[in-house]
Amino acid sequence: MTTSIIPNLHNHSTIPQQHQNYHSQYCTLQWRRGQLLVKVPGNLKQPYLPSLDNKQLLVECLKHSPISLVSIDPKLGGTSLRFWADACKQAKKPIFLSPVFGKKLPKQDQQTLRTIQRLIDWILAFFILLLVSPVMLVLALLMQLYSPGLLFSYEWHIGEKGKLFQVIKFCTTGKDNITFLGFLMRKYRLDNLPKLLNILRGDMSLIGSHCWALADVVQLGLENEKLQPQLTVITNRW
Image 1 (cartoon, one colour):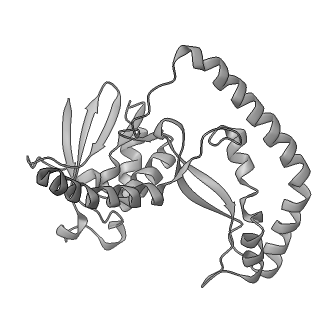
Image 2 (spheres, one colour):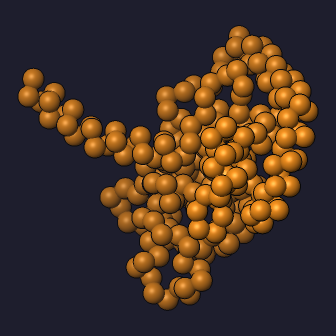
């Protein structure tokens, strides 16, 4: 097992300003059985990899590595998670949260049900997309007419087995804030129509379990960390 540490860029002034895009704490890298494990550091401070100080270099390292997937500790926080998720996306490497909230791999007798559910999801999403495609086209034209800019926005979510993926939505904000058209789209949830593409790709499900937004998972983890010492004190009192 090979282990390294990536440093906080705030502590290294020799790195050019344009490369300082990874503002986070130290993280330990462990290579095991073709998987890259990104974890919070232990007590032992180990040498860091200067080639991984910025996102583009990290992308290049991931592209030319034989790893099959990246597993990252959610305790690293939202900044680190998004940094690694963006890099893995560019390098075309799947990234998962570890541990996966106590979920286990599906049993063999559940595989048939999961296949049927996936087929139903795909069929429903396909026909719904056909029905609403004229509405989506009109919305896209109105967005480009009244507020030219990005057509879609992407948010990191956590899907099956803890896999990170980006949810596709209509962009409802302009340069400064939400547009009037964006307000109406949010009110009637029309900005969520592109999520049908996620369902077709298998990222999400219409009839299956709910996926979590990455920001919500990070916030939940922080709340649990704050609650844990209180629970320990109460237990000790008893």
